[in-house]
Amino acid sequence: MIPRRPYPLRALATCLAVALTSPAAAAAEWRGWCEAPGGEQTLGWHFYCDREEEYIDESRIPFDPGVPALASATQRIAAIRQALEESRAAAILDPSPAKVAAYLHLQRETLERAAAFSDAFRRTVWATPDLDYTLTRPVGALAKQLWSDARRGERDAALRNLAERYGLIYLGHPACSECKVFGPLLRAFALRHGLDVLAVSMTGEALEGWPEAVPDNGRAAALGLDGAPTPAVVLFDAETREVLPVGFGVLAEDQLAERIFVLTQRETGHDY
Image 1 (cartoon, helix red, strand yellow):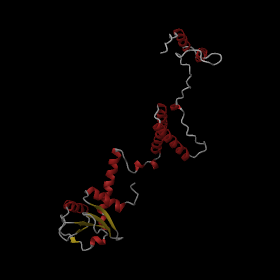
Image 2: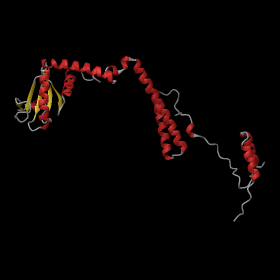
Image 3: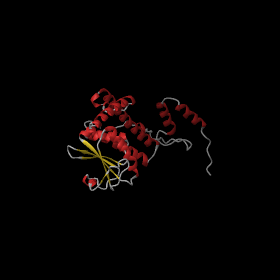
Image 4: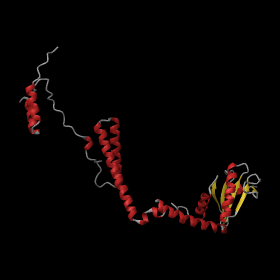
């Protein structure tokens, strides 16, 4: 075993004193202690005189995807996404603190860009009425209630005049449990709004709420609803001879009213 040499306390004290001085003086003193004029090591193995490379904090490197200044906005966004994905992949393959932090910094910058855009977006909408869709379809509680009240009044007025042009055709089955619930509901709805309804029984037997139902006799096939689930309700346009399916299965009265209103009073895309 090689005997341990006594620790050079004096040399250590000197190094500590130098460490508290200016960086330039510390570097000069380090060279004085650790290197002789010829460059060879002069101290023993107690001293770690190998100078480590200067540490570079990769996580603080400014974000620069390397896109030419004249690149289009689409190219710049693509470069940002590529840089973010590359940084993420590098952190996954080598999850060192520096690489993980670098990825998180890039991700934060991306989120800040998105937040700035989102804020500018809403401010622009607030200041530009023709871009504010909430004026067409409100989302606030008070405005939405006012809109719903006006919509209900318009819908009820349209239903009162519906019989001038449209009629309802109801397809039901005596053994259908949903028809037993929906049949009476549809009758009450039709009476309330003065609507004409032709009830069609798929077997020819009476339907719940519609004892006057007529046998199918090919009517469903003529409407293009052969094999359709029951209950089924369709609108028949007396002017155009067009058939407009309203819905299948059990529908509440407000659902029926809204669907009929949209199909007869609104063009496609008007409410959206």
